[in-house]
Length: 632
Image (cartoon, rainbow, N blue to C red; front, side):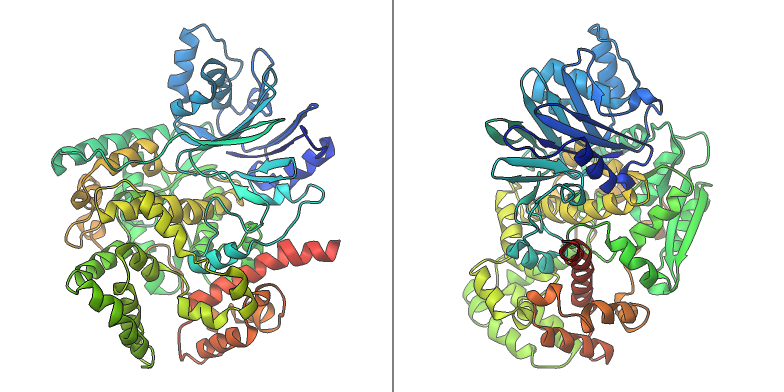
């Protein structure tokens, strides 16, 4: 696990050795163990290393092929590298190291860009082919590792995080207006956009070929739901368990201490159980708890820890969020507001005291329909089917408007439901799960910003992915959409930034692309049936998890936001919102934001979700825009 950065010199003198050093220093936290650079007349490459496999200097990067014609900087892990290495050795290739990085070099030398189809792992890399004057940049299938790039007027640069690109001279920091709107709708900026107009994300399962003639971008994989299995749930759960056991075993290969995140939920508990079955010594487990029992899962995690006799470590988040939040927020170099970033940071910090690699349960909800929102969506669709389309479209909107005039919580929920039912299933899913309603946005947004946005609406992100999905039913289309949006732009960004902030590598067996492909082939009713979420995964894990834990209500990595804003986060919020006129107030009307603030403080309404997004935007703006303007 590492950080990479670099630039092309084909058409612009982008930088020199010192520039590469600055890029590396900006992402030092991603790889504190070693660093290196490479520069010639066409490219510059930079690497920061967190040593995991082959701790010797032979594993340092940039790494050269045996012939010397290829140079690579690589971030991630290739889980099938031992099998690939053995295959290449049988063909006469001699390796200088024991690293997976060298396997990529030799595989590319043999198969070119098609090597991507052979790699199973989480990765982002840049490979310079001197003979072809070609820079080959790629990202893993599900987007577990990040890759940003800047491209404008013949200039090109890339990095694991935007902050490294921003160290180069004259990189414009013009904020992309539709990305601001997207952020408030989703709490993250969806791929392939970034918050900056001229900086983009390389989408998952894509690669780029950069030459003196320009840039070509290609997709090398996609998740298909068309080949639906006809096997019984009994047969499929056995196949799933076999796959899970193998993907977990692969992720336990490490030359440094290894442990696991344990929340007490189905996914992390299952992973810990499989780890324990594949290990001859106790698994190190780490859990975060809260003082507020409503949000505290530590007791469930402890039950699993005791069952598998793990070496268990627990940390309770007391009244210390405010004093760390500014520090935590700086690791996100574009606005990001999933509240679970807080416990993810603390569990990563806790785990790093014991291990360098942590295995997590991420991906189970997206692959096997585990979120409560799928149950809500199922109820909404059943209601939607009971009313003719013309009734839903003509009658429900005015009823929703009327419900909005009633100052009761149930009326607020009724309004949201009626608005959702008046739309198509895909648009209804967006409305129900949007982090800011259209009504709230219209109240907050400045008129000039609304005019500049024109007809743009963030629902396009959801609807475009829904329409692209090839699944045979509504649920499969939702799962595809969430995998392409929420998983990539939200969950994986959160885990990557918060773990890397603590020099910790996180691996997720449930996010193996083979698990994804198998899950996509399972009929929807085996994943979600009559309100039972993650049905097949739970059945596969029956031998490993106590029944009461397996079927308890999902809590997620939730935090007591409403309470925080009226307590420990109040001074910080006053600093960045109440007493500030910059940043978000270029887009939102401060008077309207203050109404939300006062209503929340008086307990009249809970506006914590919107206020949290505004606060996180402000802290990002303070670090990446206001501070840069001050230094100019």
